[in-house]
Structure formats: structure tokens, C-alpha cells
Amino acid sequence: MAREEPMRIIVHPHGPYRVLGGVPLAIQRITPNNRGESWEWVPGRSFPVEKEYFLCRCGQSQHKPFCDNSHLRVGFVGQETASRRPFERQSEHFDGPSHILSDAEQLCAFARFCDPGGKIWSLIEHTDDPKTRELVIREASHCPAGRLVLREKATGKVVEPDLPPSIGLVEDPAMECSGPLWVRGGIRVESANGVPYEIRNRMTLCRCGVSTNMPFCNGSHASIRFQDGLE
Image (cartoon, rainbow, N blue to C red; front, side, top):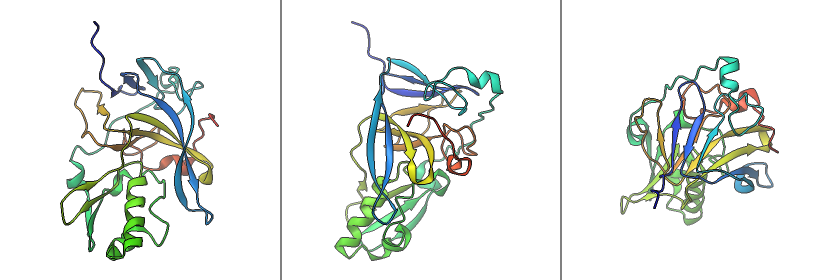
């Protein structure tokens, strides 16, 4: 029997993401509440995939989300510049009554789930209130990049949502743009030289081609109003 290929994503130098292991692929749409604040993830259509497929990283493919070798035509430069430090060493920490909030700002994908109710950095100071604590947990857990991570002070346990191994194609109707690749469920991401990045439950990879923290998203898709044409 053939050995099953483990799920992983390989960053090709100045080229696409090579996705192995038949990772499920579907649109994930940021949906606002009645005040216009990012509130829920709503799944969109899924895409049939093979055990191996290639996703556009330069933002120029005419066959998005898949690569069509446009990176060669446009001379895409996709140098990896992201830090190799573990998340905890990249983070600033905010102490609250019940939880500690870790924040690695350079990973921000500008999904804005951290804003409702007065912004999570202020709310963390009031997590002795059950309703505020519930909101803080919700906001941190909805952050697609894993920029925001909560830890229970009493137990030391990290609070993480249960996410299936998959890739989400982020759509952000409120900003009228398409967002990053939302890598979920602890899928291994390897750099072009074969060295893996820290395996995490939530990560966002750039697919607009202009992040300054490659291969990770830094929110640049919003400033250029990146459109993938999938909606």
C-alpha cells in the first residue's frame, strides 16, 4: 500500500505554495455584526483538489487560487523575511485577571475580530467579568493569523479553537478585498530551503504578493484592495 503523504505546505523560491496531502480548500468569508464589526467566519464554496496542488503566491495568476506560472512572467520576488523566533518570543504579553494575552503584532492579517466591545487589549483587563471574558476568548480565537493567543492563568492552558486541517481563502467584503490563505489545524509550513516554520493551529500566508513579512500575511492585501475574482 502506498504511504499517505502528510499534509504540508512548501514555499517555492519566488514561486507558488506547493500543497501536499490533499489539504481541503474553501472560501472563508469575514461576516460583520449589525454594527459593521468583524464577527463571524462563514464558509463559502470549496474547491476540488488533488493530493498535490500549487497555490498562487504572487497575486497575478489568472487561475486563482491556483498557480498558472504568472510569477515567471512578472518576475515575482518572494523572498522570505519572517522571523524564525517562536511565537512566544515574538509576542508582547498583556496580563488580565483570568487570562494572559500574547500578541505578535507582525503577524496581523487585518481581519479585525479583535475590535468589538472596545478592543481586546482593553478588554483583557476586565476578564474577571464573565461576559467580558467570553468576548475576549471569542475575539482571540477568531484571529486567523494566530497573532492573538490566550492562556489561562490558573492552569497555564492555551485557549485554541478546534480547527480541522484545511486552507481557507479569506474574503473580506467589508474591506472590498480578498485576504490571505488561512492555514488551519497545525499544517506544517516549510520554507524554500526545507526548514519548517513553527507549527501552529492558526497561520495566514500572503497571497497578494506584497507582504513585507513573507511568507506570512501582514495585511497588505487591504491597502492594495487585492481581488482574487473568486466571489
